[in-house]
Length: 369
Image (cartoon, rainbow, N blue to C red):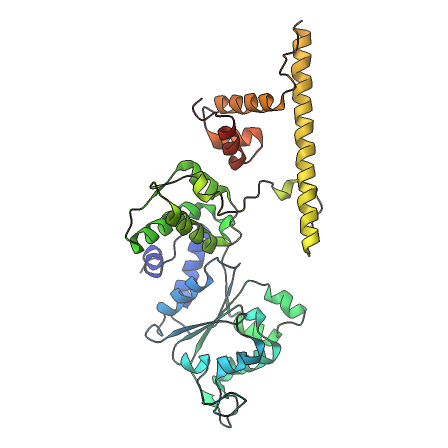
C-alpha cells in the first residue's frame, strides 16, 4: 500500500509535506507494538492518527479504546482505567473492568495524558512495563496485552521539568513521537478539508452540496484556525446547515470565525505570556490604539501630499480633500484598478487584510466598479 492509498483508507485528508512525512512514519511503525506519543494542539486530528495506527496494525481485529484523561475526575480515574472489585469503595455495588482490561489484545489511546495525576502515572507506567495491574480492591494482578498510544497538547518535557509529569513515564511513552502541525502551518490543506467536510455533510444529510465562492474560500484560507481541523469542520457544517441558496459566501462565515486582522510578529507591542482577562483586554486596547495611530499618520501623509500637489499646480485644494471616507474609497478603488480587481493583491498593496477589504468594498459599493 502506498502513501496515498493509506491516507484514503484511514481518512487522512492532506496534501502537505508535513503530514505526508508523518504518514510515512506511521506506515513504518504501525505494524509493531511500539509505544507512540502524539503531540498536537487541540483539534489537529490526533485521534485520527491513533485510529490509523491501530487499524493498520496486527491488532485491527480488536478494540481501540479512547480515553480522555482530562475529562475524568481525578478521584475515579484509577477505577476507570484499572477497574474495581465489588465493595472496593462506597458505591461499588458490583465489580467492573477498566479500560486497560477492555482493551486487552487491542490498543488503548490515552488522550490528554499530561492531565493525568502523578499517582495514576505510577500505575500506568507499571501496566505498560509489566503488562499487568491490580483492580482497586483486588488481591491478585490481572495480565493484559495492550498497545499504548498517548497524546497531549502540552510540552511533556516542560511538564517533567516542572515536576507535573513523571520522567520515567515520559521516556517510556516517547519511543516514537509524532508532532502534528496546526492547520495555520499547513494552509494548503484548508481548501481540501473544507470541500471534504462540505461533501461529507451534504451526503450524510442527503442534500445538494453548496458551492463555496472564491472570496469565501480566501477568508477561510486567511484565517488562523485556533481550533484547527475541528473548528474548520464545525464552521463548514454550520454554514451548510444555515444556508438557503446553495452558495456559501463571505457572509456565511462572518459569525462563525473570530478573525484576527493584525500580524503580531512585525510589531513591537507588549506581549503577555501568562494572560489574565485583564491582560487580554489591555492587549486588545494597545493594538486598537496602535492601528488608530497608524491610520491617522497615513491619512495625514496622504492629505498633506495631495494638498501640496494642488498648491504646486496652482490649484485650489478639493473641497472633499479632508473627507476621510472619500480618501479611503478612492484609495481602495485605485488599488483595485491597479491589481485589475485581484482582491488578494489589492489587500497586500493596501496593507490590510482581505476581510477588511471585502467589508470596505461592500461599504463603498465598489463591487460593480
